[in-house]
Image (cartoon, rainbow, N blue to C red):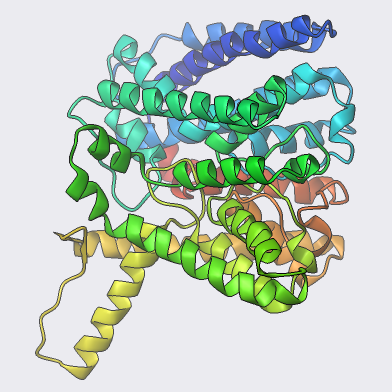
Length: 478
């Protein structure tokens, strides 16, 4: 393990985070708020970043270093991102600050805050901006740093990119990052404009656009999106939650006028099919809660988009829905968005591949001489990919239950313990019962909050980059 080069890379990312903190600092100054929380954070993060960046290191960087670097970058990013929260004095304890920061950068959206609107605008801006930074991940940051370090970015992006298969839009990773970032920025600005036209204040529009783009869910209002009670705003955010849940490679195909390939995406059709099916089923199931089909459809489609995209915004409290509806919500938490999007969960491509692998196994049992392969988008899914998928599924489920076991030490019900673990690993945000859309995570112990913070990072990086850090073999010299 080339630990010095890994720490050097971490240092470069921290210096960039120090620079990014200047943006919420400007917002605080604009609204004539105390700039001290951001000034202190910038100084501390910059000092640490420059110190690590100055480490002399050999230019030897492989898969092991890539996974370790990504894991450490996300852990340090979450820790230093908590500094403004710590210095502003609006949080009860350091672990609460870390929880909120990790929830922000991992685009989870779970919160310990009981009165969001009481915080300064600069802090709330930083809180939502962490979603936007975390939505695209450190991929863009890393590819900006890598050429200076003289290492290959493939090992970093391979460790961070969500989905069962890693692929680039174009041969050069740096150019791929620029294309992704351009699409990401464009969609965000379009949503800001749409929300402003719909009547949302400009500041609020940026907050909710950042949270939608990162599929995070932090709002500057206690009642989330429901505070605006606007059909137009609900529709706009619903549309963009779904747009950011689609693989960005599909948008690239559209931009390059490869319409047939884009529309032929198996994952896209599966994702839209799940959204449509869940919306119809829940709209009918929720008729006993709402006055009519129109009202039921309005609140149902928003919550379906919010949960499957793992954004976590709320316009209705699904904890008050029938138990059947809540079970559908839990299944959507497991499924999640598309691979290559800013959404969390297991990813639709994995669920689709798993279903096709099950179908193949059934055919093998009933027709022993039959030779059948699993395909996605017309391409063969290799046996090694299927093996990795099954290992990931096992690790995913075990992580959820292990976290739920620790959380249950707080004396919570099974629904709360399990949904808290699931929503953190899937980066969704709300859970069931007390931690639903109208609740928060403030009542949990420091141990539970620490475990859930780690689960958020584990889920965002899809488990293995963090597990690698705990393997003794990772730190041995090659």
